[in-house]
Image (cartoon, rainbow, N blue to C red; front, side):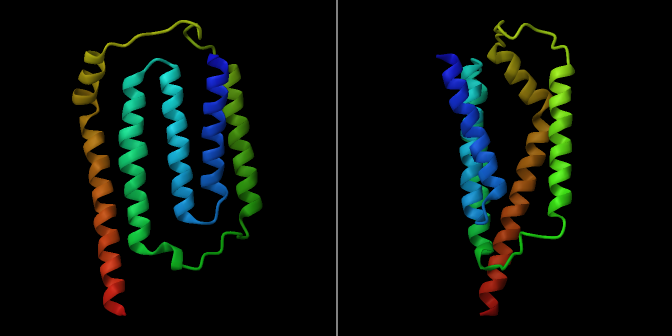
Length: 164
């Protein structure tokens, strides 16, 4: 049953990631991003790290993705004419295949330090201490960057309204 659940979540993650990259509508790409992030939360549940699954759903799937969609709607990016088929498409395909090969090589050549069948339980107080001591500043920087992006989207939307 675990393998079936993992296969479903892996298909969700890969399908969402392909949707983000291949779809032409930016708002739909943001929705595919949410789909992919929810698949990652499902994998966290499978690994018995419910806290990370909750953080994935609330922060990434909820706040960040909604902020992206909100910024896209404010800037009216759908009205922009974009050419997605450029001259660099073959070069991008070669780079993507090279990166895929590098990832596959690293994955299969690495000797992993733990038994994959062994479950490692990390207590909540250890996670909380790490989040509030070691990772507090990166979280605050990320929230500042997202706030600047949102304010920039509002300013751009207000300028466009004034031009009409």
